[in-house]
Length: 304
Image 1 (cartoon, rainbow, N blue to C red):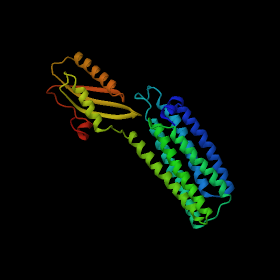
Image 2: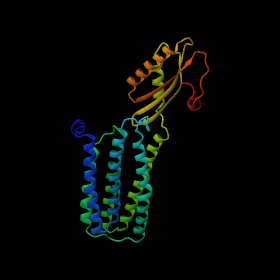
Image 3: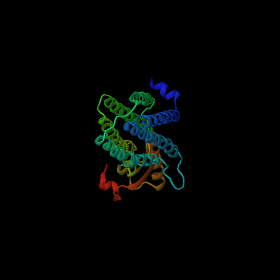
Image 4: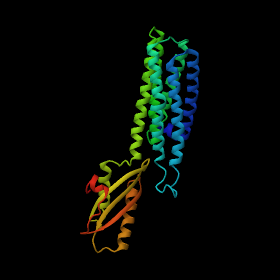
Protein backbone atom coordinates (compact mmCIF):
# COMPACT_ATOMS: atom_id res chain seq x y z
CA UNK A 1 0.00 0.00 0.00
CA UNK A 2 1.64 3.28 -1.08
CA UNK A 3 2.44 5.80 1.63
CA UNK A 4 0.34 8.49 -0.08
CA UNK A 5 -2.75 6.28 0.11
CA UNK A 6 -2.23 5.59 3.80
CA UNK A 7 -1.76 9.21 4.77
CA UNK A 8 -4.10 11.00 2.40
CA UNK A 9 -7.21 8.88 2.86
CA UNK A 10 -6.83 7.52 6.40
CA UNK A 11 -6.44 9.97 9.27
CA UNK A 12 -4.73 8.86 12.46
CA UNK A 13 -8.08 8.62 14.26
CA UNK A 14 -9.53 6.39 11.54
CA UNK A 15 -6.48 4.14 11.55
CA UNK A 16 -6.77 3.77 15.32
CA UNK A 17 -10.51 3.01 15.09
CA UNK A 18 -9.92 0.32 12.46
CA UNK A 19 -7.17 -1.21 14.59
CA UNK A 20 -9.29 -1.09 17.76
CA UNK A 21 -12.24 -2.81 16.06
CA UNK A 22 -9.95 -5.45 14.53
CA UNK A 23 -8.27 -6.18 17.88
CA UNK A 24 -11.66 -6.49 19.61
CA UNK A 25 -12.87 -9.06 17.07
CA UNK A 26 -9.61 -11.03 17.17
CA UNK A 27 -9.52 -11.00 20.99
CA UNK A 28 -13.09 -12.34 21.17
CA UNK A 29 -12.26 -15.13 18.69
CA UNK A 30 -9.14 -16.14 20.64
CA UNK A 31 -11.04 -16.28 23.93
CA UNK A 32 -13.77 -18.37 22.30
CA UNK A 33 -11.20 -20.75 20.79
CA UNK A 34 -9.42 -21.09 24.17
CA UNK A 35 -12.71 -22.11 25.80
CA UNK A 36 -13.39 -24.63 23.03
CA UNK A 37 -9.89 -26.07 22.60
CA UNK A 38 -8.07 -25.61 25.92
CA UNK A 39 -4.84 -24.40 24.29
CA UNK A 40 -3.12 -22.13 26.82
CA UNK A 41 -1.41 -20.14 24.07
CA UNK A 42 -4.87 -18.98 22.99
CA UNK A 43 -5.49 -17.56 26.46
CA UNK A 44 -2.06 -15.90 26.32
CA UNK A 45 -2.92 -14.39 22.96
CA UNK A 46 -6.33 -13.23 24.22
CA UNK A 47 -4.71 -11.45 27.18
CA UNK A 48 -2.06 -10.02 24.85
CA UNK A 49 -4.77 -8.58 22.59
CA UNK A 50 -6.63 -7.30 25.63
CA UNK A 51 -3.52 -5.31 26.55
CA UNK A 52 -3.34 -4.09 22.95
CA UNK A 53 -6.88 -2.74 23.23
CA UNK A 54 -5.96 -1.01 26.49
CA UNK A 55 -2.87 0.46 24.79
CA UNK A 56 -4.91 1.78 21.85
CA UNK A 57 -7.49 3.39 24.13
CA UNK A 58 -4.68 4.94 26.21
CA UNK A 59 -2.90 6.22 23.07
CA UNK A 60 -6.10 7.77 21.67
CA UNK A 61 -7.06 9.40 24.97
CA UNK A 62 -3.60 10.72 25.87
CA UNK A 63 -3.02 12.03 22.34
CA UNK A 64 -6.19 14.11 22.62
CA UNK A 65 -5.17 15.38 26.06
CA UNK A 66 -1.67 16.22 24.78
CA UNK A 67 -3.18 18.46 22.10
CA UNK A 68 -4.98 20.60 24.68
CA UNK A 69 -3.58 24.16 24.87
CA UNK A 70 -1.70 25.32 27.99
CA UNK A 71 -3.82 26.39 30.92
CA UNK A 72 -3.32 27.92 34.37
CA UNK A 73 -2.24 24.64 36.01
CA UNK A 74 -0.18 23.34 33.05
CA UNK A 75 1.44 26.42 31.60
CA UNK A 76 3.82 24.53 29.31
CA UNK A 77 1.03 22.39 27.87
CA UNK A 78 -0.05 18.77 28.35
CA UNK A 79 2.40 17.07 25.98
CA UNK A 80 3.93 14.70 28.57
CA UNK A 81 0.59 12.99 29.21
CA UNK A 82 1.37 10.58 26.36
CA UNK A 83 4.50 9.49 28.18
CA UNK A 84 2.56 9.06 31.43
CA UNK A 85 0.21 6.78 29.50
CA UNK A 86 3.16 4.83 28.09
CA UNK A 87 4.63 4.24 31.56
CA UNK A 88 1.23 3.15 32.90
CA UNK A 89 0.75 0.62 30.10
CA UNK A 90 4.29 -0.74 30.51
CA UNK A 91 3.70 -1.41 34.22
CA UNK A 92 0.47 -3.25 33.39
CA UNK A 93 2.41 -5.29 30.84
CA UNK A 94 4.95 -6.56 33.32
CA UNK A 95 3.11 -6.83 36.63
CA UNK A 96 -0.40 -7.92 35.68
CA UNK A 97 -0.24 -10.10 32.58
CA UNK A 98 3.29 -11.32 31.88
CA UNK A 99 4.03 -12.83 35.31
CA UNK A 100 0.68 -14.60 35.39
CA UNK A 101 1.27 -16.10 31.93
CA UNK A 102 4.75 -17.28 32.95
CA UNK A 103 3.27 -19.02 35.97
CA UNK A 104 0.56 -20.75 33.96
CA UNK A 105 3.00 -21.61 31.17
CA UNK A 106 5.37 -23.34 33.59
CA UNK A 107 2.45 -25.33 35.04
CA UNK A 108 1.57 -26.40 31.50
CA UNK A 109 5.18 -27.47 30.84
CA UNK A 110 5.24 -29.55 34.04
CA UNK A 111 1.81 -31.10 33.33
CA UNK A 112 1.22 -30.89 29.56
CA UNK A 113 -2.20 -31.63 28.07
CA UNK A 114 -3.32 -31.90 24.47
CA UNK A 115 -5.89 -29.34 23.35
CA UNK A 116 -8.95 -30.11 21.24
CA UNK A 117 -9.84 -28.86 17.76
CA UNK A 118 -6.30 -27.65 16.85
CA UNK A 119 -7.50 -26.76 13.34
CA UNK A 120 -9.79 -24.10 14.82
CA UNK A 121 -6.93 -22.58 16.82
CA UNK A 122 -4.67 -22.58 13.74
CA UNK A 123 -7.31 -20.85 11.64
CA UNK A 124 -7.85 -18.04 14.16
CA UNK A 125 -4.10 -17.53 14.71
CA UNK A 126 -3.45 -17.27 10.97
CA UNK A 127 -6.28 -14.73 10.73
CA UNK A 128 -4.74 -12.74 13.60
CA UNK A 129 -1.27 -12.96 12.06
CA UNK A 130 -2.32 -11.55 8.69
CA UNK A 131 -4.56 -8.91 10.32
CA UNK A 132 -1.58 -7.60 12.33
CA UNK A 133 0.59 -7.51 9.21
CA UNK A 134 -2.02 -5.50 7.29
CA UNK A 135 -2.58 -3.08 10.19
CA UNK A 136 1.20 -2.66 10.57
CA UNK A 137 1.35 -1.34 7.01
CA UNK A 138 -1.13 1.51 7.59
CA UNK A 139 0.91 3.20 10.33
CA UNK A 140 3.98 5.44 10.05
CA UNK A 141 6.49 6.50 12.70
CA UNK A 142 5.71 10.21 12.64
CA UNK A 143 4.60 10.51 16.27
CA UNK A 144 4.94 8.86 19.67
CA UNK A 145 1.41 7.47 19.34
CA UNK A 146 2.13 5.89 15.94
CA UNK A 147 5.50 4.51 17.05
CA UNK A 148 3.88 2.79 20.05
CA UNK A 149 1.07 1.37 17.90
CA UNK A 150 3.39 0.20 15.12
CA UNK A 151 5.78 -1.44 17.58
CA UNK A 152 2.91 -3.27 19.27
CA UNK A 153 1.56 -4.50 15.92
CA UNK A 154 4.98 -5.94 15.08
CA UNK A 155 5.03 -7.52 18.52
CA UNK A 156 1.63 -9.08 17.73
CA UNK A 157 2.99 -10.61 14.54
CA UNK A 158 5.72 -12.35 16.56
CA UNK A 159 3.28 -13.41 19.29
CA UNK A 160 0.81 -14.87 16.77
CA UNK A 161 3.63 -16.74 15.09
CA UNK A 162 4.78 -18.12 18.45
CA UNK A 163 1.28 -19.21 19.41
CA UNK A 164 0.80 -20.84 16.01
CA UNK A 165 4.07 -22.74 16.48
CA UNK A 166 2.88 -23.96 19.89
CA UNK A 167 -0.35 -25.35 18.46
CA UNK A 168 1.41 -26.98 15.48
CA UNK A 169 3.99 -28.69 17.72
CA UNK A 170 1.18 -29.93 19.97
CA UNK A 171 -0.60 -31.26 16.91
CA UNK A 172 2.39 -33.43 15.93
CA UNK A 173 2.84 -34.93 19.38
CA UNK A 174 4.65 -32.33 21.52
CA UNK A 175 1.99 -30.96 23.93
CA UNK A 176 4.69 -29.39 26.10
CA UNK A 177 5.12 -26.80 23.32
CA UNK A 178 1.83 -25.18 24.43
CA UNK A 179 3.42 -24.16 27.74
CA UNK A 180 6.78 -23.28 26.21
CA UNK A 181 5.32 -20.87 23.68
CA UNK A 182 3.01 -19.41 26.33
CA UNK A 183 6.13 -18.45 28.32
CA UNK A 184 7.65 -17.11 25.08
CA UNK A 185 4.66 -14.79 24.57
CA UNK A 186 4.87 -13.69 28.23
CA UNK A 187 8.56 -12.82 27.83
CA UNK A 188 7.70 -10.94 24.65
CA UNK A 189 5.16 -8.92 26.62
CA UNK A 190 7.81 -8.26 29.32
CA UNK A 191 10.31 -7.06 26.72
CA UNK A 192 7.78 -4.71 25.16
CA UNK A 193 6.78 -3.40 28.58
CA UNK A 194 10.38 -2.68 29.51
CA UNK A 195 10.98 -0.92 26.19
CA UNK A 196 7.90 1.27 26.64
CA UNK A 197 8.87 2.09 30.23
CA UNK A 198 12.45 3.01 29.35
CA UNK A 199 11.46 5.15 26.37
CA UNK A 200 8.72 7.10 28.15
CA UNK A 201 10.19 7.54 31.62
CA UNK A 202 13.20 9.40 30.16
CA UNK A 203 10.84 12.16 28.96
CA UNK A 204 9.21 12.39 32.38
CA UNK A 205 12.67 12.79 33.92
CA UNK A 206 13.41 15.79 31.66
CA UNK A 207 14.98 14.28 28.54
CA UNK A 208 17.28 16.61 26.62
CA UNK A 209 17.88 16.63 22.83
CA UNK A 210 21.13 15.53 21.20
CA UNK A 211 24.37 17.51 21.09
CA UNK A 212 23.69 18.43 17.45
CA UNK A 213 20.65 20.38 18.59
CA UNK A 214 22.75 22.52 20.96
CA UNK A 215 25.34 23.15 18.27
CA UNK A 216 22.63 24.31 15.88
CA UNK A 217 21.13 26.65 18.49
CA UNK A 218 24.55 28.16 19.14
CA UNK A 219 25.17 28.73 15.42
CA UNK A 220 21.81 30.44 14.93
CA UNK A 221 22.18 32.73 17.95
CA UNK A 222 25.74 33.72 17.05
CA UNK A 223 24.53 34.92 13.66
CA UNK A 224 23.27 38.03 15.45
CA UNK A 225 26.11 40.58 15.45
CA UNK A 226 25.00 41.92 18.86
CA UNK A 227 25.63 38.54 20.51
CA UNK A 228 29.20 38.16 21.77
CA UNK A 229 28.75 34.72 23.33
CA UNK A 230 26.17 32.00 24.10
CA UNK A 231 26.39 29.88 27.23
CA UNK A 232 24.37 27.82 29.74
CA UNK A 233 21.97 26.49 27.12
CA UNK A 234 19.44 23.99 28.52
CA UNK A 235 16.68 22.29 26.51
CA UNK A 236 14.15 19.74 27.73
CA UNK A 237 11.23 18.00 26.06
CA UNK A 238 7.84 19.18 27.31
CA UNK A 239 5.91 16.95 24.91
CA UNK A 240 6.12 15.18 21.59
CA UNK A 241 8.46 17.18 19.34
CA UNK A 242 8.14 20.13 21.75
CA UNK A 243 11.09 21.75 23.52
CA UNK A 244 11.60 24.40 26.16
CA UNK A 245 14.94 26.18 25.72
CA UNK A 246 16.74 28.32 28.28
CA UNK A 247 19.99 30.17 27.50
CA UNK A 248 22.28 33.03 28.40
CA UNK A 249 23.65 35.44 25.78
CA UNK A 250 26.46 37.94 26.32
CA UNK A 251 26.11 41.43 24.84
CA UNK A 252 28.14 44.63 25.06
CA UNK A 253 27.95 46.23 28.48
CA UNK A 254 26.53 49.56 27.26
CA UNK A 255 23.43 48.01 25.60
CA UNK A 256 20.20 49.47 26.96
CA UNK A 257 17.45 47.37 28.50
CA UNK A 258 15.18 48.20 25.57
CA UNK A 259 17.78 47.12 23.03
CA UNK A 260 18.40 43.89 24.92
CA UNK A 261 14.67 43.20 25.10
CA UNK A 262 14.26 43.68 21.35
CA UNK A 263 17.27 41.44 20.70
CA UNK A 264 15.86 38.56 22.77
CA UNK A 265 12.54 38.78 20.90
CA UNK A 266 14.36 38.56 17.56
CA UNK A 267 16.48 35.63 18.71
CA UNK A 268 13.44 33.74 20.02
CA UNK A 269 11.50 34.27 16.79
CA UNK A 270 14.36 33.10 14.57
CA UNK A 271 14.97 30.03 16.73
CA UNK A 272 11.32 28.99 16.64
CA UNK A 273 11.12 29.63 12.88
CA UNK A 274 14.23 27.58 12.09
CA UNK A 275 13.64 24.82 14.68
CA UNK A 276 9.87 24.13 14.87
CA UNK A 277 10.37 21.80 17.85
CA UNK A 278 11.15 24.82 20.03
CA UNK A 279 7.92 26.04 21.63
CA UNK A 280 9.23 28.21 24.46
CA UNK A 281 12.46 30.23 24.71
CA UNK A 282 13.79 31.97 27.80
CA UNK A 283 16.83 34.18 27.16
CA UNK A 284 18.92 35.73 29.93
CA UNK A 285 21.07 38.70 28.89
CA UNK A 286 24.55 39.02 30.39
CA UNK A 287 26.70 42.13 30.12
CA UNK A 288 30.16 41.82 28.64
CA UNK A 289 32.80 41.30 31.37
CA UNK A 290 29.98 40.42 33.76
CA UNK A 291 29.96 37.25 35.89
CA UNK A 292 28.12 34.19 34.58
CA UNK A 293 25.19 32.96 36.61
CA UNK A 294 25.80 29.42 37.84
CA UNK A 295 23.16 27.04 36.49
CA UNK A 296 22.63 23.31 36.03
CA UNK A 297 24.19 23.61 32.59
CA UNK A 298 27.53 24.59 34.14
CA UNK A 299 27.70 21.27 35.94
CA UNK A 300 26.27 19.07 33.21
CA UNK A 301 27.31 20.51 29.86
CA UNK A 302 29.78 23.26 30.52
CA UNK A 303 30.05 26.40 28.44
CA UNK A 304 28.76 26.00 24.87
